[in-house]
Image (cartoon, rainbow, N blue to C red; front, top):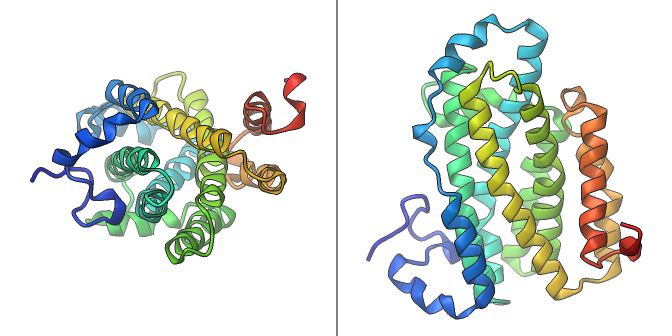
Length: 282
């Protein structure tokens, strides 16, 4: 039976073989997300990073420091989200089969993103190490402590709670989709795209642009799940209470204006969806 090349066999609820997927098309919203995902497929190995590798040493020291922090941070974060998405799909299987399948598609994206940022780490940043694991360890040295705490402590803890059945899928979506992707990733991606507008690193910018497009539908999925479930006000309050801290985990490599914009987008997203009382004003 065929297996998706981006998903390891036996990955819990993510190990749905290709031959079994036709039975899941009965869900109307699944069809919509599947069409979106089909348009966004890309291959990380196809992006040419040779001009980036050539141009990198000539960048000013401060710019290289800033970009190294952002790109190394994504090298760490994408590896973490890809690893810890499996319990989300396993838990979702008990809630909604459509949701489980969409998490499967999202895991495929996260694995792709991890491969791209590992290429950047190896070929552009030239982080030490002959293997992805070596480069991951080297990337951690450039990531802020608050950033590592989110992805190496809070996210694994949430995945463990989901696996044990001690928390619900909506709590996971709050952290994963709305905070990590909707705030932390959004801030880092916007900072990178703005910094690289001069296209001095054209391959990196193109890869980040594609990652950004993938993450938009991931955030949309999380918001859709919250809208459908109508979570308790406490969950939304918890999300908003931690939003500013999440936007700040990149430190000074994300400009204040970018952090403020990402926080505004988070609040607007929830308001327009009717999950906060201020939606009329938004």
